[in-house]
Every structure is written in C-alpha cells, then in structure tokens.
Length: 87
Image (cartoon, rainbow, N blue to C red; front, top):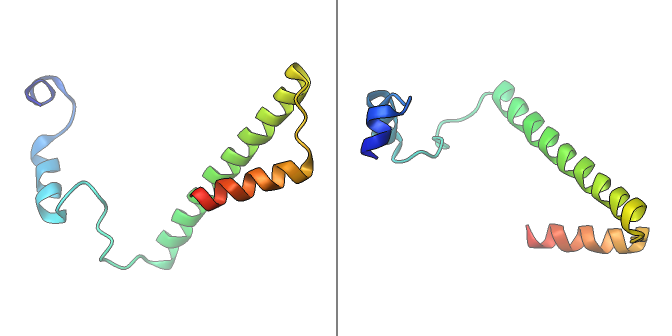
C-alpha cells in the first residue's frame, strides 16, 4: 500500500472520502437510478453478453474447423442451459 501511495496514480484523499462515505468500493445502490442511467447500465450488460456469445460461437467454430470436434445444436442447448443454471 505504501508503494501505491508513493508511486501510484490514485488520488488517495479523494478515494478515501469515497470509501468512508460509501462503506467500501462498491457503488452506492441505495440511491435510485434515473431511467437513463438504468438504460445505460442495461445496454452495457447487453453488449457484454453479446461479446460473450460471439466469443463462444467463435470457439465452437474453431473447435469444429481446426480440431474436428462437432457440437450438435442439441448439445449446444444443453451446455448453454448448464451454464445458465450455474450463474
């Protein structure tokens, strides 16, 4: 911590005030969000989920093309269901 205070780029006075007032580094969830803020948050979540879906599709294509591993649609649906139930 001392090294970060000495050499880091974090403004410790400003950040310490946030930590004291909010009780931690978590965002303050007690204040209501405006509809615009909520929409922006949901759009970010949607973008992240779309990137994950695109990534998994790319992995499946590479497995099929480069390694000859075929995942049927039925098996894909089972795997997706398992992933959702774990989350």
